[in-house]
Length: 114
Length: 111
Image (cartoon, rainbow over all chains, first blue to last red):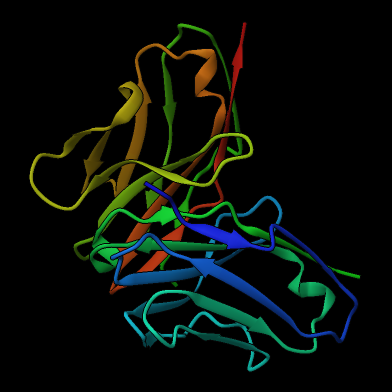
């Protein structure tokens, strides 16, 4: 079956632009996670959804970052007024049962802010 | 602050030799522990996990890890590596419903 997909795979944005990153989780997975992975680092947690409810957004680095999952499937991570420090790979993962379940990761979106 | 430490950023090892990738975490309470692997140009995938029960956990591709509560460690081992094991390996810990990843260890297999 299809895995987690993310689009676009690569995004170049000028500083100050808004970007939207899309995640299509595995069908039927109720849990969805977003991570930010800087070069040479491990993934850092951004936010977590259970169906359409955003249960934890404590990892979002600033109020320029916003995530939604309105129908409990596809999710979008939006970054407003991008800054150079936002350059990273943004990973999406889904699982059947929250944190304790196996998370299935997408290939990531590499965002470069110039 | 709670943390996960992977001391080795890179580990070179000859093909068919054994390998151990180290992971330590800082917590005195119950934790859930994971190892994920990222092959070149692929997404992360789960190697193995410890939630409870036996402290020796077996995963895919011949890997295993042992949970040591007294040493707060969850080291990953394989008795004989193959060139196909070339990848980056991430240890992850769930503490208080927060998931924390280590910085990763890049495994280089030498011919």
